[in-house]
Image (cartoon, rainbow, N blue to C red; front, side, top):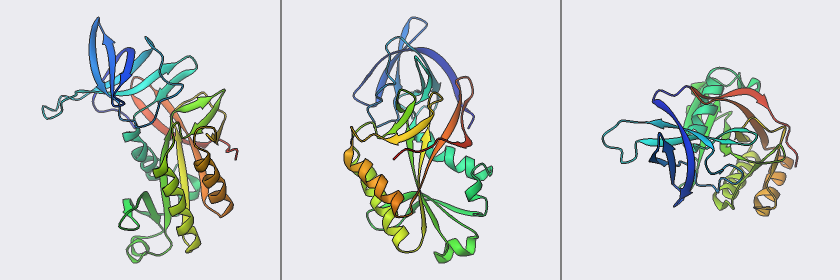
Length: 239
């Protein structure tokens, strides 16, 4: 995914009120949107290089959106608003071999009055319309890592727990279901659930995989001057 907006570089100063960050650019401070509800553990280093994009839409209060932060071990993508599109783009370009026979899609698929999942795939549009041969996919962004191990979540997520239960229910009904972790960092060699942060999520992920839910940890390639993409390669998952 290449950025269409203007790309700017600066120095990260601080994050506050969860959705805002101060960035120093040419001696001035710019307030940037942080599109990420997590804690951003292991990502926030004062005075570290960062990258943001600039949108000149007059209806936007904040023109800047934080995209990448530089850590001692490399760049990290922190904009979770990109994550679903990164996976869709990977599917569209045939980068996930297991999905190559799935030609039809629908994003933000409602499975009940209370729940929707990020993506559903099917062999044909007719199958999708008929609700047959569906593969349900929930997508999570990963920015947290310790000692080269990517981990999720970086804060307790009851919503994420519910998604795993939904995927298990769908698998029990005969559908294919997957949880996809998009690792927006390049300093990791494996993935594991962050049991020390959210033990219930870790327990549910292990249970889901045991019941046939497929888990993937997709590797990203980050170019701070142009954008980010899913490569199609996957990290091994340790449960």
